[in-house]
Image (cartoon, rainbow over all chains, first blue to last red):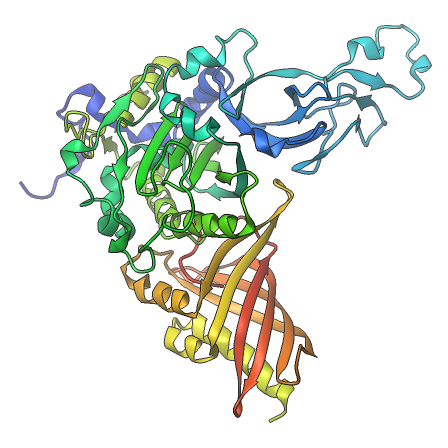
Length: 396
Length: 152
């Protein structure tokens, strides 16, 4: 079989419907709006790690579904989240990405709020003669917030089921690692990528692309039998490693002995590789001594904001922290051996689907939930299709 | 050549060597106990972060493996303006602070600013030459797009 003509290139693949995805899911503006309305405004997503709000009145500002939000730890130690919008004229309340604010003061007319979202001050309130504008009714718009294993999740939909029913058992295998000892975020970076948000998330769901990374070709692909690499999917579009994968660090220049010099995270060995992808757009990936958490936020059909966090043990010695940072940076971060390669891949595919040169993405690998099976991608798109009420293979 | 002239030439050559991917030349400008670090202040975490850290051997290993990696295509250009040169802990040591701007030119010839920051260098006089003893890059730019496999 040789090259294909136009008709052959554009025809729907002769494969089960769940084995391919139309390129339109990465570029169509109507689909993007549906995702906002039916996924991102309805589903729980990660806001931050608890360690980013260690003290009362610490806050973190972040964007979600085109809106600015902030999470803040109250004097009662409860983390709450609010739209970052003054009730008065809509000015943005908090400008810095993080800080500590016992009282939140709008710069515009000096209205003030407390850490529980209550309006505490309106200058010259007597001027509102009708009495309908008074601080008792002018609080901030609270956004539902729940914390699971130290991870603060938010949901814009007041009527959505609780976080537990969304996550199900998908984080169970991470419970010991995330809670066995207190963790702390030591790395954070953002990148705006020229791709649809799903193109990034797919890089975390697709093990077949290990072959792209020289580090993984030399440390992971042959570290254990493919049939022993178990995969698991959960209700709700989540999926990850069923059992731990292994890495053989001696295979790559400079990585030998990785993990001998610092304790692994709780429940992990230094050579373990464990990951889970939470629908819609969070990935938790641990390589023994460090864990990385990705959150990708759509900012357009073909633009996405990627946030990457690296975590280690809270309170560890400076020496151990330095080693853990090194382990993190070997694979991840803007100068890591792997992450820039993933970004090249995500943007490259996006470029093809943007103008429909690429028509379909094939997710047909079936290795009985082992090896480099595409089952996680299929589970993700099944949930995606259910949420937006579209067939991923023929979405328009 | 005065010390200051020699130091300016050293800093300039270090940029040109990386721009040209002439890593042997770059390492030739570095002392045997050279160390390299990229530091970034995170306003999100309110902490200092390390994004890359290597000794001389680590840098050599990084350079050696580069050809096997999938990298951002195009070319980087490092533009340096030396701000201060001061004597360090001894008469043989200098502390040099420079502003650095890194541009990326893609394969279509389009150039964009990739990063701005500073080089905080320690330079030592050894024999008749001056060498880089440490280079700490402090970056203002925190979104590097698809990232990099090479030092700045």
